[in-house]
Image (cartoon, rainbow over all chains, first blue to last red; front, side, top):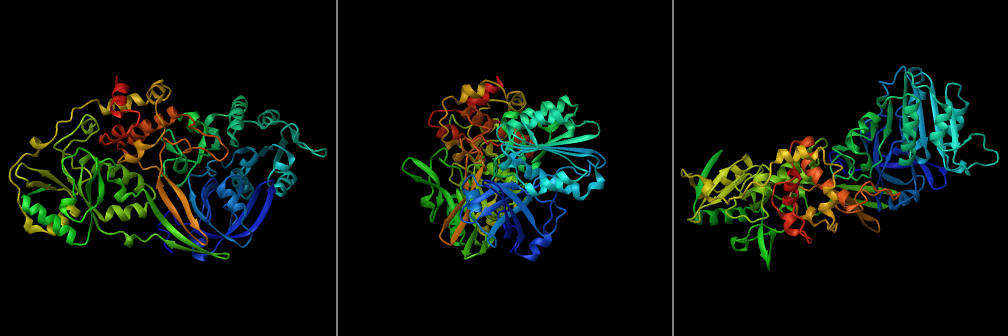
Length: 280
Length: 335
């Protein structure tokens, strides 16, 4: 099958399904055709259009690291028609994938720097790709700090990896849950991500901050980073505008003169300063 | 640019030869009060004496709904059937207006920029545009304000200017146009030394396009968007009649084990256009959506693809049920 039609998906076999949190699943996907797997490569930050045949396509980042070969992973919450259609699939089923699309986190430029990851809720998946990539090439980076929060203990995703990261001496992981979301045996923080970040107070010296989360979390996290001395060009985030085509044609993710699918999804805060905030 | 002359009889003969060649021919056809592009089978089908079709000819190359690929589900297996470019027939659009032909320039920039869209390209490559210069215009026309004119040839393969004797000057703009002329070479004579401009409609210039572009840079937070769009119904008619609007949706059409993924026209004026599944909507009000329409066409497109997203055809103003007039709105932005 020719890949010249940009709307024609790769056929993917669902190899493994992990229930991450209520309503949230991770799919491990393998290319059904060997030649598709061979021609495919991606970098951290890129996304794809995932399809449940019969329901349509939905946009998520690639949640696995490019250092892991032979498969890709995506994590999604069953919310609308497509994600519920995906949710109904089982291991061994076939689904569609188009990608990789969009730009990447400039991980080469970050070599020799400290990395601070700030994530909220279901926004850890886009960051997990970068975190795993950084951990697999650990020698390239200095201190790695991860501040991750969710509504409740139950809503934290990638619980196995969180344990792994917590056990690593070369990672400073701080997890938090919203007040009221804690369990009796919860040992992490209780509080919203921005205030926990304020408390952790990572140094901004030679440091890049990567922030992914709901718009409200991002809105309150930027001032904390600013207070800690982070310059706008050292703060990165991803925009999550609605998309259909993923390739800069359907017009949906147009934000100012930029297209999130082509110019993003990764933007520095300095870049965001040039486009109107109400458009995303 | 090569020019030829074709007399009235020659024109009919040439048209007949195009029909006989097996190409699909789309031309303006009258249905009651409306004139629109439909497939025609004789010269008598072609409408005379009208200013503008209700819809542009866009749908011939960028159909309102089109299958991007099909699939079949069989237990756990899925097989795909790709879009076949060979399935698109050779087509001629006859009597397209210069503003409509010009609309395919920004459309092509969008569809072929970065990632090539083979579905769009298959239609474009197989279509020859024979435009007719405009002898008449109405108050909605403003092509001369947006880099166009009643005799502009941009986007056309051939342009005919009809003469008082019923014959026409044929300007041959592209190789595709030349091929269509060559297919009935004996219908044509060498061109008379005649200036087509005296046969063209007079369309006044209403505003300076570069001033619009410059003013819009500072206009994002302006009150004008709300003022202009307070009466907007969000019906999307303006986008559907527009020759340059390219926004589309990708939808699923499935029944049982078979399905198709379909591209269909959409509009930035619709409230659901940018709405996330979470309910968050960056453009939740009609004024935000109207602003996007204008900024996209007159600010973002020129910066991204060096072309404006408007050819001055005036259709959006003619179609608007609440009389929003884009030409008046742009003129007021300049002031």
